[in-house]
Image 1 (tube, rainbow over the protein chains, first blue to last red):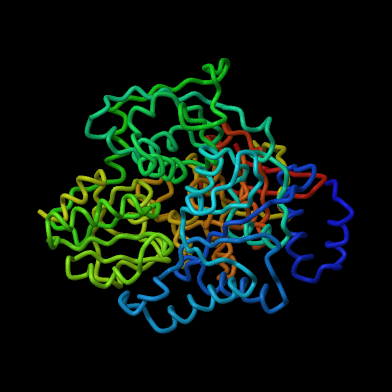
Image 2 (cartoon, each protein chain N blue to C red):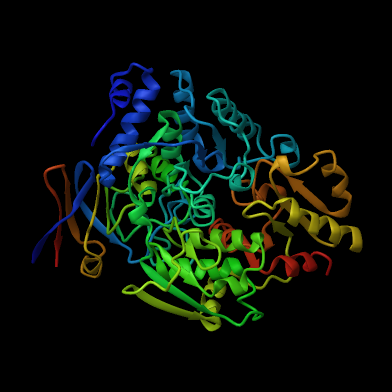
Length: 395
Length: 137
């Protein structure tokens, strides 16, 4: 691999032990993937923050980086943690869990990270077209690449961490312009208002399952995606079922081809096929313990819809649990909302916190991503649209 | 009959053991229990099977970028696969194997996934100058 003089110096240890080790790992991964050189990144978003997910092994890895003097070379934000950093006492967690979660956050903060603790960093600090970034979190990677035209691969959590320290990433795959061309054309032929095509997350999940990997050019899907929230649900589903880091989506992607690409495989999908994916993800639940919203995190806009519903209909009959970034809400509001059966958490999400500890075993969700991960964790899950899920809370 | 298949070396090492094959991609986070090595994804062809101590074949990774930590946690507990063979590896798998010193090769031809039998003995040699998978067909 070609290395600059500065990179050679880092590898000799001139910039400290941790930066040296971090760059060694980045070079090793780069060489494995066939990168000819590294590229500087402008910022990083690190996934793998929840103690529930990374365990003692992950905590020790992060702790060691700090103890040996590690710092981040570029602005670095963090994915959701395993609890709300202020309301953790309402989440019924063990003392050890809380202590270890704080330790993870404090280590990363000491290394210079900004604890945004959200999976939608693209709405808070959106990268520009063509900007090289080092991002973990599958939905954020897809949004950055597909909607903003930034450049990142599907960096695993610890790789984004090492790249944030090294300030560099392997120049390979989705970072290279020539590697961002479509490999398969997916034509969506849905009825706009059918039961399944109203679930944009399900459409994304289904496309992810059938495409698997590569770069899909997706046409016709814009008819089923009428706002940014549905677009985020769609991309989250796509990134859950596939190993896909970039989708070129007609009308949404700045790099989507102007003409239908020729010479690549073409797949057509219609409403009936969505049913298979729906049945894989969703079971009918008679008495759900809660309606959980915010996978990916809600933005101010969707949260306002939840609040408006509460305002007009009063106290919900079932628990509504909403997850959103701390930066998007006035936290003095949050405790008042509990009397309406609306619980709001920041810093964490339904997938990476411990819903069971909160007395929840069955949920209604509006996200195919959440449906997949929560059913893997043993929860009963029913998938609905945002509006239907919210309506269910009052029935 | 023994068949020697040339691959690309991603993480160096050698292993010999029982094959466990999935024609479907794997999401280590959500798909595999980090405490037991058992595949827990509902409806996955390997659901209920344990990947620990096996030579694990699958086309490519999918889903969460936290999968790397699941691989690492499994390795710390001694529950990791002996080696991983992919059609195309992505960074999530590569960094998991780098941190855990699990031999990793890719460019394994997809159609051979149909020919490797679960439980058959396979050998993986992953060196920079020589990367091969030896299977019985």
